[in-house]
Image (cartoon, rainbow, N blue to C red):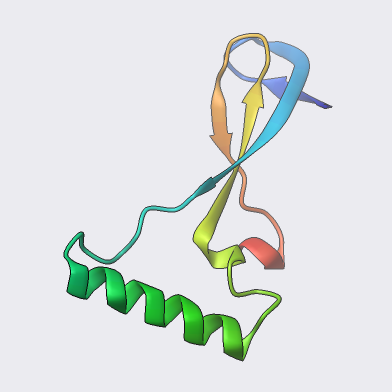
Length: 78
């Protein structure tokens, strides 16, 4: 775990990292889900390393109060 300043607690506390999948830009119908599959499949073929990194968000969560902050830092999260 890493120590960071928590604005809600007002002091430096232990934080943990949480990675969550971003919500899909496609709808819930079968046709839209198939489009999402094709987009992911061809995106993975073109760039196997960065294919899934644009589908996730990185959050840092305070272990004391549970305050969650989105921290998509670096090239891999852009």
